[in-house]
Amino acid sequence: MMLDGNRVQTLKDRMEAVMSGSFEDRLAKAIQRGNRQREEEGSQRAKAARTDEDYRQQHGSLRIELSDHIESAIKKMVSHFPGFNFKTVVSPDGWGAHASRDDVAGTNRRDVTQLYSYLEILVRPYSSTARIIDVVVRGTIRNKEILRRNEFSLLDEADPTNLRALIDQWVVQYAERYAARG
Image 1 (cartoon, rainbow, N blue to C red):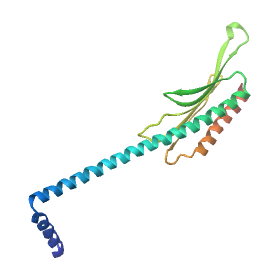
Image 2 (cartoon, rainbow, N blue to C red):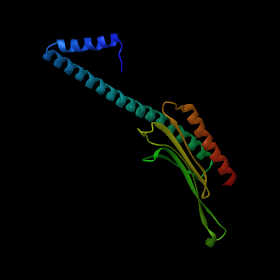
Image 3 (cartoon, rainbow, N blue to C red):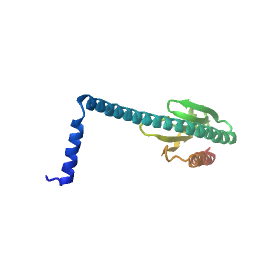
Image 4 (cartoon, one colour):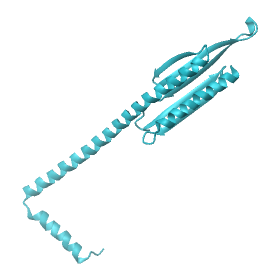
């Protein structure tokens, strides 16, 4: 490998500059460089931790906004169908709302079947590995699952308006199917 004359001279000059100072000076400079490097790595770690905390806060505020919207939409649907029980959901599975009702069908005592209908929409908890907002819907009408969907968006790309519109669409879709079968 051949180096041009200027580059060889530059390396030679550097070595002379390093060796020209006393051992104490070189040692002090090396320690300063090490300290600067450690501080930079620490600030990068702190920045990454702040970023994760920022994502967590963004997820929290979006979760509150969406779960409030979910509650409102499901309450409105329940007001149109007497017999549904509404409850707010705060669980390890997520935050949102659940509406359900039990019906009985049959013509005589031996022929009685219990029919269960429900709609549940949840915003799943924050995951630091995925950094997404995840909304899940499950719906059953008369013991038959008719709706099971999952919508997620990266927190950087999450659009609350689109997610609210999607929640509205799910509730309207469930209400239409329930009205047709119930």
